[in-house]
Length: 143
Image (cartoon, rainbow, N blue to C red; front, top):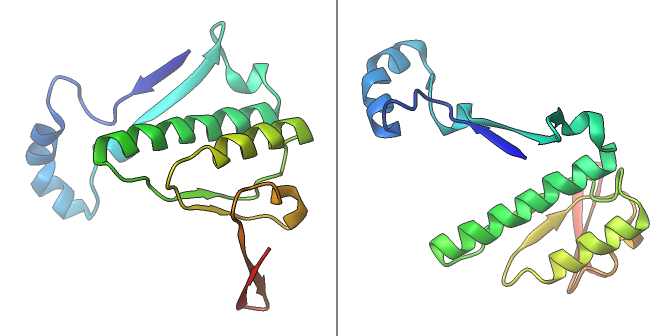
């Protein structure tokens, strides 16, 4: 189950909240309410996902939610957002890495940036381009 908590008082539209808090936000130097204050919780049979799933399963759930969000944004704006996936293979077993690579390869017209210390773990990503970072320098080479 996915439970979402908005980052503002639901008795008002987000526009009304921004307008009502404008002066106070300006004086404080930050926005007190809004989408950036939203949160969601994933539960299984009423328990937080952290109690029911391994760290790898949690990471896979988070990435799949990101892919679903990407698809929704693409449909809404007609263009695919850029995906950034840090430390791709960590906490994912080989089978789940394959599943994720398959999903990534199915993404239409989407730029995907993946960080990893072992490029062989992402070798099946379609049309990869590798950037090697060492001592603050970046080199580009085809894989």
